[in-house]
Amino acid sequence: MEELRAYLEQVFCIELLSAVLSNPRDREKAFKGRIRPVLKKGNLVYQFEIFKGKQVFHENLEAKAAVDRACEWMEHFRQMQIDTKSERASVLISKKGKVTINRKKVTRPDQGKQDLSHNREKQYILKEGMDIPFLRDLGVMTQEGKIVRSRFDKFRQINRYLEFIEDVLPKLPKDREITILDFGCGKSYLTFAMYYFLHEMRGYEVRMVGLDLKEDVIEHCNALAEKYGYDHLHFLTGDIAQYEGMTKVDMVVTLHACDTATDYALAKAVSWGADVILSVPCCQHELNRQIENDILSPVLSYGLLKERMAALVTDGLRAEYLKKEGYDTQILEFIDMEHTPKIF
Image (cartoon, rainbow, N blue to C red; front, top):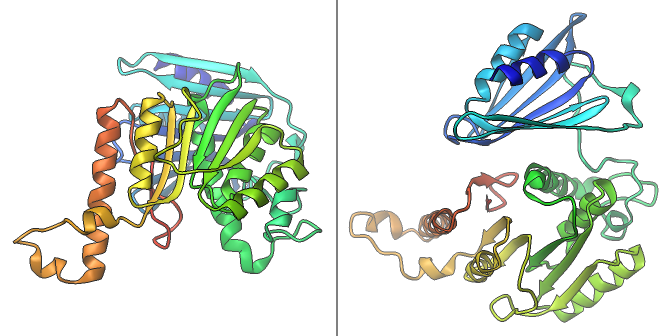
């Protein structure tokens, strides 16, 4: 850890923009951490945000103590992404404690606009005022780039989704075109957002295919992709279980694929050797029809509770299946309980 400590002592200064700790060794202890510099009563300190379950814990530390705390937390996490005004660094820690630091110089047009306020507003990846054509056409933004207040939840959901995408970027190759399949894409709010984020904002060469059963929806999505000049984003009408259009895929996404459609998508992703699988399952009817337990029968007699129990058990089994296939699997809440859990 001495190499990490030396690097943190160098970057924990006014140059630091943020640091994100991810890929935990034990999710129960914490599943994510963030560090950013803030000015408190005129003094520069470093605010730690540690995410445990549904709770977030904050701590403000001066530079030396912040370096000590960051090193402590990196015994729990496998990865840290650090952004400064002049570079982006990825810190990886192996099972044996070997530290690898990859640094890349970057040019940031807004270097002089760093917000060090203690209680700053939420910083979204897609921001109000940006020129984002698909958000205008989908009714989330006005022509002037303002967020439509009645669609703010959708705007927040899209940004939360892109935070998940940002977390898995180190798993995706940067030196070649990556192939992404989105099963059950529907109206494709998140599909367009993912393409825009990866290709337009992060510079990845991507080939993306969205698949859904509704022909009219697919036709509309293809028209939008053509309108925006998204040449490597295509939409097809088809069934997840029957799709045979690929032999190797880098990332598979399933957003609200109903019932066993999620299972078909996960099985396809595993067979293709996908490096990343993101899934938001829903409508867990299959196990709901089968679940029985003498001890729990009084509880399972309530339809709502039985439905929730079936959903939890189903997603637990899916997570174990992915672990058995060699995936580092996490179950996270997408935004709140009106959305279903998310499987990595």
